[in-house]
Image (cartoon, rainbow, N blue to C red; front, side, top):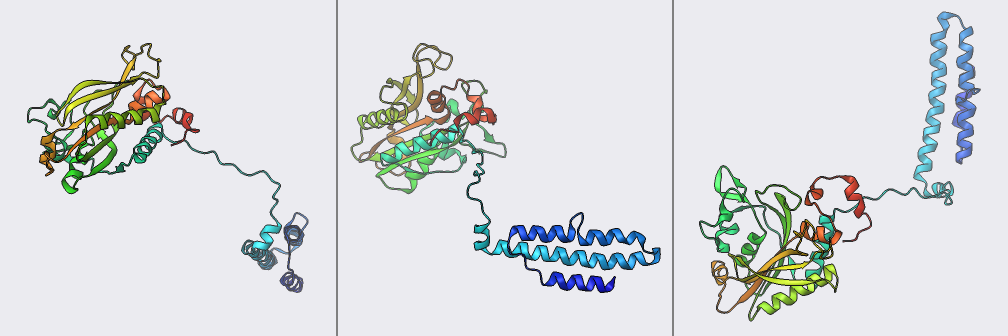
Length: 341
């Protein structure tokens, strides 16, 4: 037995399989059902009981030598790209992986950012946890303004001066405090309001706000900017109208509506059966806000606007329930696999 094992080990050391077929033939010859190692294990049943352990150790030594040779040649083939290329069948079909889908809020947000970027606006971001000055006071909110009430704002319990921002206008204040005009930025981000969740409203949503401060800026500049934005996002034929409104930080103020894309202006629950949907608020920056940030309101003027991304996505893709954006239902997300943004 010892002599047989020694001869087999010498034979294995001289073997050099050069391709996959030879390597497989080597494995079958030594370890297959009718291979040499298998045959030696079968013969052990005829040995005396006191000799089986020693014989088993010798046959195991042979088996490990075969396995080591197989492993060595497999590793060499992996390291040699020329051998790998020769063994690759280029006619086999590719293994296509299923692609994921972008979230509609991300798709629309990137598209909106792109439109404003083409108009010369640059992107600025800021903290989601804010203080009272940047979120309210600097924006001309009076001390008794309803938006300061707990029903609208998530305040941090340990400090009534700290809150979750209710709009990205707080980033506008930070930019105006640290930058001299001209200023031409957009401010995308997540905001929070203490509201009841329904098909039209949520306590978390996303905004893109814009700010343009320079000399001789007028309401006409604001309207032209937003007309271009709406036509680029929704198409040239979209109906657009402005309505007078009120915001503490702009004067005059307006809201911009577009014709409802879900019902084509016939009336539905999203447009409250009016045929129109408000997509943004806007106006000329109040002089008090400019002065609060150290900007001379006699020399500079500007406009600001704020757009809800979820509401815009609802109109663009005819989605009638804002809650779908936050449920993470893959059946809903997969519908946007072919969208670009």
